[in-house]
Length: 91
Image 1 (cartoon, rainbow, N blue to C red):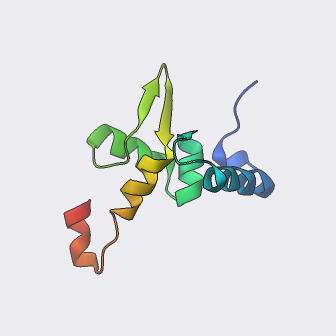
Image 2 (cartoon, rainbow, N blue to C red):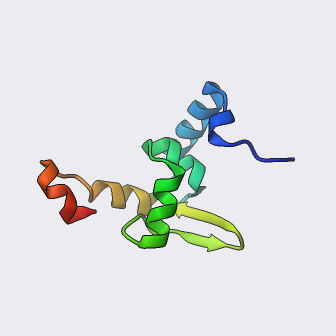
């Protein structure tokens, strides 16, 4: 059975994935689609960060990409800036 793309998910499915992420323990692993939904970032942004560096830590198992919740939380917590002039220092 083919996996649904993010755009094909019903709002209830999207909400369920987000809730599962936020309620999971910090050592839980998630696929990139869940991270994309939970943090409102695109899959292409995550892919670019994996390729170019500067993104959250990830693991690759076979062809699948996994992110550990604690690593993602740490990454996004470190991206807090006070002005747009500071953004280039974090990116």
